[in-house]
Length: 123
Image 1 (spheres, rainbow, N blue to C red):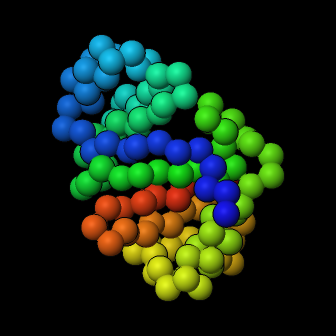
Image 2 (image 1 turned 90 degrees about the vertical axis):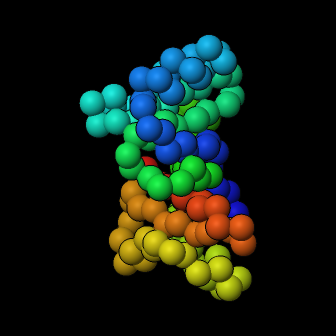
């Protein structure tokens, strides 16, 4: 199963303060929309998403169909196929992708410790 690009999505209280903090760790803005309250930051191959008032908890994020630079990766496992495989394994999503559609969609599963995992396909 190819989950695509990986990043950590952080639920932040103050986007500007978080951006400044992570800039000191060598991260630079690589995408997002500050007016909407979110920003993607990169340091080499590491990526973090900063999301103000969008999520309750930090979460692991996978982007099927994207490479580490947020560009289409070519062949990939569709989020709906990933969701079906998870369900077949007994892992039930807390939020599901509509399996009758194609293109962008997402689903969320929660690990045994309560950590949300977002599988967010943009292509």
